[in-house]
Image 1: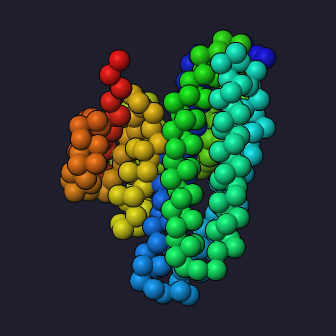
Image 2: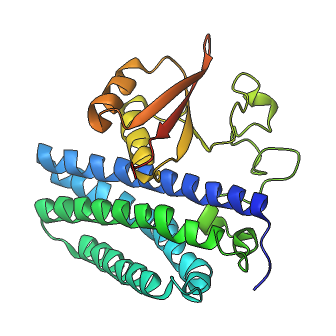
Image 3: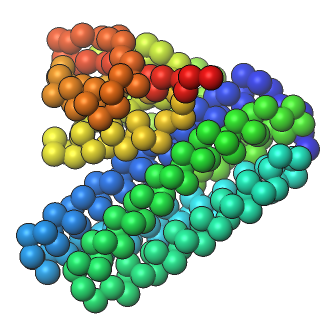
Length: 266
């Protein structure tokens, strides 16, 4: 195993956690739309939403899982504390794959909605374990280079490795390296969740899913097109003081707020 670069490994860990939040947010959006269609009794729309969800699962979520099995998991399993943990994570991958198959074969809108909701719950729990157990295990292992494991692994980090000049290299993601992002400069090292182009009705779900995927003491920077006061109130109600906030940019065109999951008391 190659020796690690602590700074590069921390950056790689942040990229993994950020992408986990993005996956969770998109999954939540798909599941919410499917469940709403089922609740409304619009069967044609249920199958349309299921098709959209299963296409995304095969294009994004399952390749992410397979990429982890090819890179992160073998490295973690080689560590003294990693074998049983990885065995459990692989078992959860099998559960997720089975739920995808069950979703595809469901013949009842109610069953499809329930299966999608179960998939969302299992995936959220799975991501939390990866963020809080697997990633820290790899970062803390001096003989493992997390950055090296993830080099070019788009399915795990969601974008190519960032060039040294800033930005993620994807050509317009709004990560701080593009002129179009001049009004939303990078004001913290934490991963950013830019919801300005997200449909208004999906923003709360995406942010909450990203917060759910954050490990204890993790943080993200929310980038919004207005002061998200109703969302902040919902976060306070949902997490009961467990998410701190720091206003980094207060308009007039862009608002940036650092949201920080409080560490678990010892």
